[in-house]
Length: 149
Image (cartoon, rainbow, N blue to C red; front, side, top):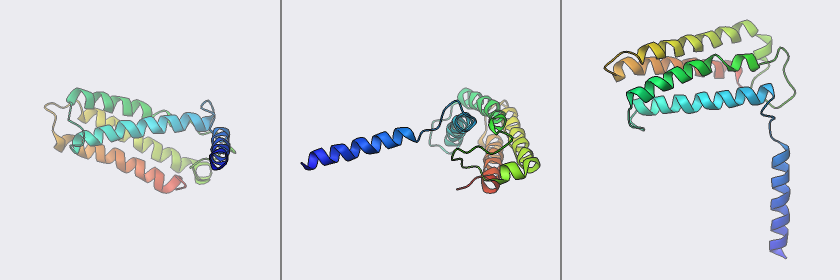
C-alpha cells in the first residue's frame, strides 16, 4: 500500500512539474536559453584561467567570440511591457530602460574587449584575466540592479 501511495505522489509531482515549464519560444524562454549559454561559456573561460579546466588557447579564443556574439542577443527578448510569466527580472528593467540598455552596452563592450585580448599571442593570464573580470563585473552589475534573486 505504501508503494502505491508513493507512486501516486511521484506521478502527481511529475505532472505538476511538467505544467510549470517556460515556453522555449516565448521571450522569457529565449532569453533564459541565451543567458544559460552565456553562463556556460563564461564559466569555461574562467575555468581555464583558474586552472579548473586545462587551458587551450584556441578554445579560449573561440569561447570569447561565442560569448561576444551571445552578449548581443538577450536584450531583444525583453518585450516593451513586462510579461506575465515568472521572470527573474525586476520591474526596473521596464521602468529604467535607459539604465538597463546602458548596462547591456557595457557588457557588449566588455565581451568585445575580451575578444581583442584573446587574439594576443602568446596567451598570458595577465592579459586575459582582467578582460574576463570586466565581463564578470558587467554581468554582476546587471544582476545587482535588475535581477530579482
